[in-house]
Image (cartoon, rainbow, N blue to C red; front, side, top):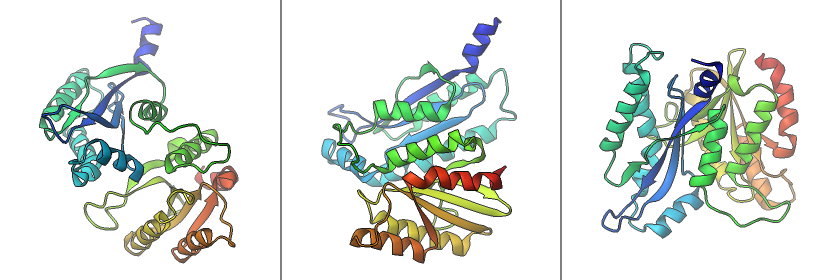
Length: 285
């Protein structure tokens, strides 16, 4: 095998688009997620719709859509993928790609009749996370009209910025991403926290929070954090990265600030996140 071919294989990423149709007779499918994976190692990333605006779009396009199924889908799919990987005696096998393809074909056939994996496609890319974001934005995300400079961002835009900061600080590989909270709240809880890190026996969690678009999310985050702090078997700390700096003279901002404070969540505006990460970095080395 030539060096060029070897490099191409190392940078090869396969992906599927996850589609949904509430009415198969009409044969109208809508993209709801992306699965990307490395066929050589089995590493994978998955992203499905999660913002209320995205669910609203599904309701508009397909009024009979089962919202409960869609909200629980990610955990179900990831559990199936985890079970598959655990069933293999070892991950680096000459037959791993074949086994993976068999699994995905079987998985596709076992999905609800309203769910479907697109045929597999491949791209040359070096980073699973970056490729996931690109494909999601291209194939799934709402197409928004251009916004004026300074217009507040969505959770997705905050998270994208945070990911860039983590990577520039060379801490990306030290993080856990999209952490399930159901182990500390209730079985079936679909909520996830964006990032988690560890240092000196403490586990930290960071969540993107759009104050401008969804200030009520602060209440959900606070409730979740309080449950986690009470039940988790480790010392924990929490931060919320907000799209704008909180101004105490604005009622909405004061509500978010006080809600986070009561749950011992540190608010960090996007404009100060790089500095916050720089202070955290020495503790994660």
